[in-house]
Image (cartoon, rainbow, N blue to C red):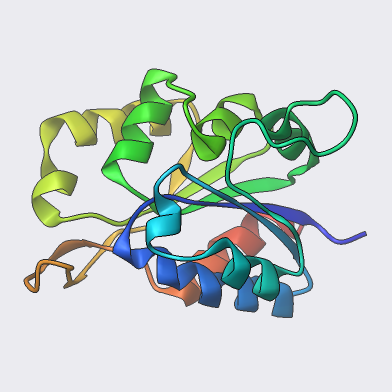
Length: 179
């Protein structure tokens, strides 16, 4: 049986990397289902992600999967791993604070599967003490982080905050689910 990867995509210009991540994970024989944060659809469309993953994309908290189960609970139970890539400062902070106001954050709070996050944000945001404290808080409860790396940021400058390379993300996913 294929391992089930749940890919959470938050609202970042790096959301386009989700396409390459999905393609690479599927090549590795993993099944990928995508859920989007409330604003991620401004950066990438559900249709694109559905076409690449071969699975329905979940965008809203109150989408019904089947029967009476809330969407985020059903997704959380199905996942062998929850990868959030890109993980914005907003997404990281909400999860660290227990805020569950979209499909990604509510599923993160509901899953018992391991969680991997690949941050992507401006260097000033990434280095902000509050964001670093939130990352530390999540690491302390077992959430693993991949990157970020130094690279060209959306503002046009070079800095730490660029999403990790897809190869590194896929390597960490495989390490977490293929034993």
